[in-house]
Length: 184
Image 1 (cartoon, one colour):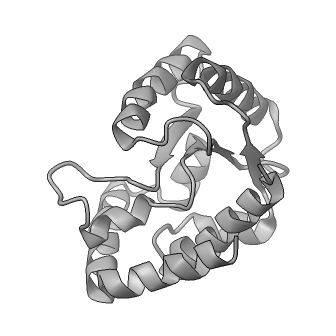
Image 2 (image 1 turned 180 degrees about the horizontal axis):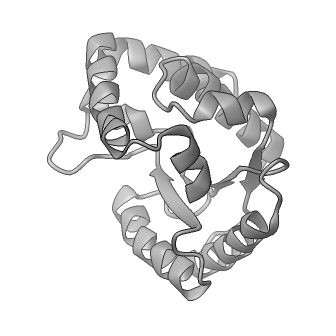
């Protein structure tokens, strides 16, 4: 497994999709400031990933926000199936609770087969959360509040993203993703 190629592909996805399509108002600042920690785990089992997740949650909580504001824990060898991944998120949330990090950190979910409830698997809006590899995005709650302190604004983001991707169309989305995949 070429970890640097995985990180490079993830960075291209962030640049092209997340920032390029303005899907996340928080991403550009941390991407340009280089305060995203990219970690590719060798985990092939859920229990190993859970241990790695615990380590990364602790590391993020202990790091200064000026050096590491957010972490992407990329796990290409485990939880390749979205339903398994989705079930694992509950364990991740419990881990945050167990580590007394509730209100400090949270997990955002990104998976190549991501599917919002009630949508067709091929629906354009699912691509807001479809990176090249499964990953857990560890976020500081203070960072989210600092950028979007208005809760109504935060609720508008997913709706705006759905409109953006539906307007772009699935064919163009797939072309952008293929370009990223081809560069891996």
